[in-house]
Image 1 (cartoon, rainbow, N blue to C red):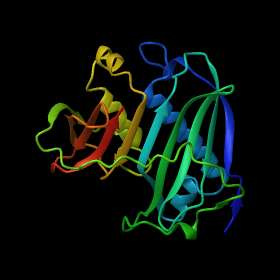
Image 2 (cartoon, helix red, strand yellow; image 1 turned 90 degrees about the vertical axis):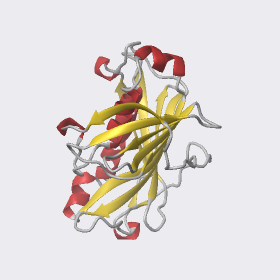
Image 3 (cartoon, rainbow, N blue to C red; image 1 turned 45 degrees about the vertical axis):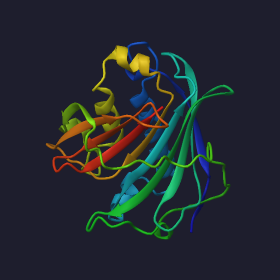
Image 4 (cartoon, rainbow, N blue to C red; image 1 turned 90 degrees about the horizontal axis):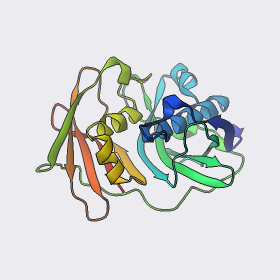
Length: 243
């Protein structure tokens, strides 16, 4: 198994295209940035998107949790980092962080798997995933939230038809675009009042161009709310707990 550097850090700056109505780096832009640095580091270790494509594989994310201590303002200089942990049999953990000097602005824990393009089955990590030369700590040891996939009786808050601009290299809706579509169900004022500091996200099913997904909202005993995206068959494709 190839040994690679455990992580990577690059200097970045918050561009106006990344910002929301308050000139703060938006929640989807944070997730985009983490996804981008993950892709750069993965490619440097020969398990990026195009390298996996040559092996007949494509990456999928099953779980993500992003914690936001402070969202940076437009023009702010930041440092974006990612690192990998040793994998288990069919999944691996990749973590990311955004800092401004010594201040930890946000971080994200992600669980990844690689599926075969010919049959959709997960590929054992031992076949391609490198071993890090240093084992770095996860941002926290908090377990991912457990959510009920049944949203029967929940409140419908919006519908979204998946378009060409939502599709990634895997041929399905990009993970971050679920978050964009979900937040698009709320007004700017509503999002301000929610004061989101953490989102726990779980991706259950792949959705494709032309499908319409329905967002359902319900109360939660631990979070501010839980939101599910149902596909055309009424099956839960995506879930999020918002804190």
